[in-house]
Length: 365
Image (tube, rainbow, N blue to C red):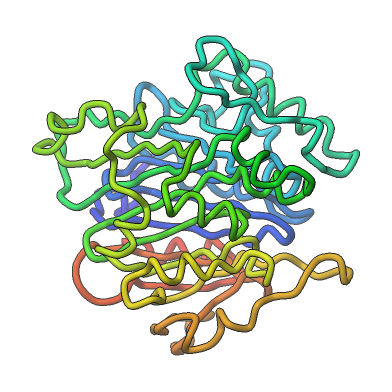
């Protein structure tokens, strides 16, 4: 099997797949490592099928696995609809088995701090029961809680780093003692990724109150961080597995700004965080990307028009089915899959939208 040319590229690739009512993101780091964030799918498209055929075979291994990390932000149905790809009879042979599996959980053995999800408060449709069973089985025999990649390679890329941030479930329960839906959303794990001048923030469905608590580094905050630079590893040997003096998310957003924001909670009004925008350098991202929830009923909520405005983003050049446009936001709503390329140098990221993800493979460099 001949390797595609992008294998040797030092760009970062971020895929935002069109999965209808859900979220699935794949990050190929500039060191050719793979991170899958959430496992949403639609009736006619499973991102994992595409990744298995076109991306995973060419990734570098991390601790014997092709996928370095799988992250499930929170256990709501639209984020775990394709989780069964991790539950093959021999899980170690699954192409999606990862060295690190990271998710909100209820493990108590060896826990120093209370971490347990209150499953009685997770509200999902009845048909999600099997997926929740699989979700729980995936961490049963694994070491949790939160980790990022333990970087020990001889290869090094300056200014390549990522972090995970979340508020422990019992504390989220205190923030939302009576609202079970917001409790579930508040469990969301937030990922920040930086490659040189380009930055990405994926907050999943985190709600404004929990986001404020996280940004203010309130009680119950957990954070992990990896810097892919050999010169800095010795200074921060435990950042990948223990909360300590890792940079706060607020300080990162203030120092580096934000190139790409994945709009919280599918771009709905209920997910908009004023505190997030205040934390970002220049108080707005370059571009908002929306994995947009389909609105089948009034209870599905309303999209916030702010994200499409000049107040919501600085705006940048994007390519939609080959046509160049300048946009403040882009969305998967019209059937588009989105590919974002970070080259780490100055200028804007490259952003492409196509209805067939195979077409986007031609953009990889």
